[in-house]
Image 1: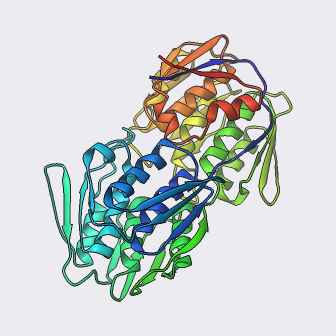
Image 2: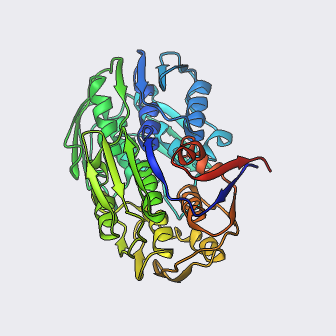
Image 3: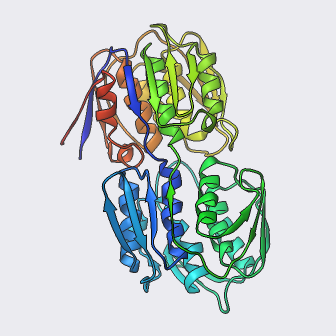
Length: 420
């Protein structure tokens, strides 16, 4: 099992290219199941989760070709095995996203209940209930969702009690080929949801209202092929900007968009960073200063993203002053706090709230990643800690960050990957 060895104390400087968004490309690849024609996806990040969903599609009968320039070609006309087995699904929550497309296109699906990061319950109830409203017959037994529909899915009026990103995406894909009109109320507004809708519309779907809390989908008989470029990863962008802020550095993130993470940029400015924006870049300059502590409450988009909470906890551990983090999206997303304490962080937990008092220094220690974003927070802490930090179980970080040690190293960080 690989580890990261990080020697802290270097101020990050330079430019880094941001990869395509993990949370966009996974539903987009699942969406390729909706058409028999060739689809070309560009700006695909090389990540373990992408490899997993490609294996899943291939096992179903789809043909996938990887070419240079971060491009994947998908031809799903040969899909004849609409099943998602546990051995592939167990590592990735997003695998549930094949359920809607398979039902819409093939009328049946067997999908294992998904795995992924242990950050709290993310039930599939929204997916199941929504598809049932569209006419699907669904049972859950033996760890599998068994679903079928006779005569095709039908449009329905669906209202979520709680905003669900994957729920919105799954039902939006299913509705693309359903008969009639589907309305999703209290829909997720995340950029990745908008990206999926734009992708489906490129293939001939009729989706409107994406980016608002009410999405309207007029079902069409069939989708065509097409070419689509995945949007930049806003969480990767934010992670590198926080790394520069923590180390007092100055970096430019390239191939990204400032409007994807306005809430994050606002908090970085509150922490003392000088932020500048261009059409496809964001720069951050801390001028060698320690950041100031910030208060954060996570919320669905356009609020502060839960996927950036762990990184800002790391920032607050070495900031000037006291900061409070309130996690409202996932109930078990503070596991990184215990590992940060091993490095000398002053963190007190009370339910879904973390109280952090900044220290001028952290000390290197062996730490263990518990989930994807937690692993990023530990790497960030290692960048500022005295000594050499060992981060174990970095397979988590490989699920969501493309070549993180290479990218950090090009900014001056002393980091390397070693085999256990």
